[in-house]
Image: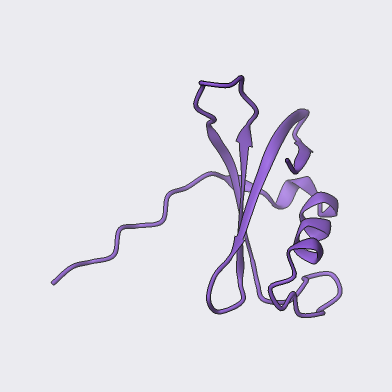
Length: 87
């Protein structure tokens, strides 16, 4: 489990890549078994590491390194993506 402190609390970090190479990370509460974690913070990351401009190229380790060392103030309050419009 990837863990990170954000604003004086420890959260589990769940990250994934989109098909276009960008990434999404969610910081959620750490709970006991059987409880439901609360998504608290979210961060969208471009296809390149914002600090080095080196492409992530789907490298989860490189993404995790960035997520664990970036400034905690860039994490936004969690939001849900809007549902796609259907015709």
